[in-house]
Structures are given as structure tokens and as C-alpha cells.
Amino acid sequence: MPHIKALAALALATLLAACTSAPPEAELPAKPAQDPLMEMLNNRQAAAEPPFFNQAAAPVAQTGFLANPNVQAFIQYQHQHNGLPLDYLNNFFAQVNYRGNLINTMNRPATTQPWYKFAANNSGSLKISAGRAFYAQNRAAIDRAAQQYGVPAELIVAIIGIETQYGKNSGSIRVADSLATLAFDYPRRGAFFQKELGEFLQLARQENRDPFSFTGSFAGAMGMPQFMPSSFRQYAVDFDGDRQRNIWSSVPDVAASVANYMKQHGWQTGKPMLIGANVAQETPQIQALLNEKTALNHTVGQLRQMGVQPLGSVADSEPALLYRLETAPNQYQYYIGLNNFYTVWHYNHSRMYVTAVRDIANGMGDGL
Image (cartoon, rainbow, N blue to C red; front, top):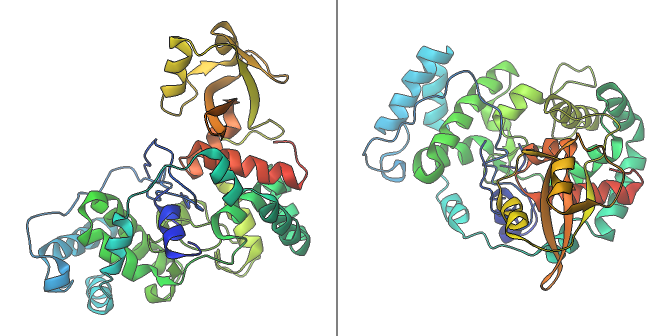
């Protein structure tokens, strides 16, 4: 969940990754992405899902946080199950600010954008040239993270670029305010945001930081890589040795955190993300493939048997999926997504997002 440039762009963004719970399959427009909700949705769960505190009650906009029964139930749960002190929780909800404007932002309908427009906005020549400059300024730190985790430097840079324009648009909203508001006044995603709020309160104590010092997107996504709190707790890395995981301004920490996320989600060193493909005819079988949810349910060999011809060398045994993107009105390019495609898709559940990341990385010189 995150982000961005103009408020509209921001909305599209977070409604799309950074990253990093369970996003919708439909392609959303640009982001830097994320239904972050998703993203980032994705992975970031502890052993058991916490309950969703959503009993009928007056909204927090009227009651305030501490007088709201759902907030009180949340406080008791966090105290009993996660060991957070009651005074810490009560002090937090006594000081947090309700941000009703965020509800309006979240409710803005996301519009589907064709690939040719998405690519122009997210992986064009300006984004690539800015990536080269960012890489040149931070090469030592990025290369060290890339080598340690086995993840290409260009991929690390591309993720930072598409998420926050290389750190220029990482969000300035207090994470405490955004998560608390969405947790208790946005029931459509309330369970997700209550979970992330609990993760956030735990990470603030673990990092020995004032919870009101964290800033991020309107959906609570933080720093250059737009990690949600659960992703921060699981994948953020102190790579500069200062005993803080600073994904806001420490490029070593950011680079290592992104690389660690990718490695933990199955990045295979030296393997491609995707290759182009030819499809002679969109048979019902091909159409069924294109309509599948994103998962590696087939092998390249099985796709060949169904009439998909890879435009490159790839083993028939490789797990794969087929998708297409609109390169011009009513014109499509077909692609075979491979393991590393699926790894990046975990960061943001959008096929366009993953393809744009690949294109930025390739524009900087690596063959992904």
C-alpha cells in the first residue's frame, strides 16, 4: 500500500502495490502502484489471522478513537496476543488523528489503463534515464546488496523507481493517522488495515521509534520501496550497520530490503523474468489461459502444446503463465511469465507493473 505525485496518481498507485496482502487480479492503473492493499499485499502474514473488529458502532469520526468499541476490542487483542502495553496503546489512540479525506481517496474508482499508456507513464525513457542517474550515485551500496542477495542491481533500482520515483515521492502522511483511520472507518479493507496497524504498532516498539514519526502514503506504505508494516517487519534490512532499518533515506537499507524481499519470494539468480511469445490463434484454450489468475500453473512445454511459441530459449520444464498486453488500440503482444516474473508480481499484483519493472531494468542494461 505504498506514494506519489498528484493526488489522483497517488490513489491509482496505492490502489494498484508498495508492495508489499491480497490484491485484486484486475489490472489497475499506474502507480507506483499497489492496491497495497494488497501488495502488498501478499504475504506478510503471521501464523494466525487476527480477528476483524467490526461490530456495529458509531464511526470513529463521531466517537473519537478511544471511545469506539471496535478500537477498545483491538486494544485488548493487541495487549493480550501481542504483548503491547495498555498504556502504549491508549496513548497512541489518544494522540492519533482521524483523516477522513483518506476515505475519499480510497473510494475513488480505479480505472483500467491499457499497457501502452501505463508503460509511457511508468517505464518510459525519462524513468530509465533517472534510474541510471540514481544507480550511478549509489552504485556501491546497490551493487553490494545485489551481490549478497543474488538479485540484479537493475531490478532493485527499477522497483525503487516505479514505486517512488527513486525516493522523491515516498509520501508525507503520518502512517499512524492513515492506518488508524482506514482500520476503523474503511470496512471494505478494514481487516487488512487493522492487521497492518497491529504490525505497525509492534514495529514502532521494535525499532524504538515514536509511532508518530513514521511517514508514508495515504494507505500506510512506507519509504522508498513502499513497504507496508508487515513487509517492513519481515523483509526490511539494516545494511548500513547503524542498527536501524531506514527505508526512507538510507539507500543501503533500501537496496538490501528490496533484494531481501525478492530473494525470500523465490528470485532465481541468472534466470529471466519473462519472454515474448507468438500465438497463431486465440483458441478457446488460449483464451482460458489468458483469463486465469496469476499463477505458475503450467510449464513452457505445455504452453507449446497449446499453440504458444516462445520467442527465445527457455526449457520446456520451466513453470510458466501466459498473458498479453495491449501495445496499441486493439493490438496485443503475448508474453510468457516465468518464476522471476511471479516473484516480482508478489511485490505488486499487476502484470503491467511487473512488465514495466522489467523494462526499466532492461533499459538500464540487464537482460531480465
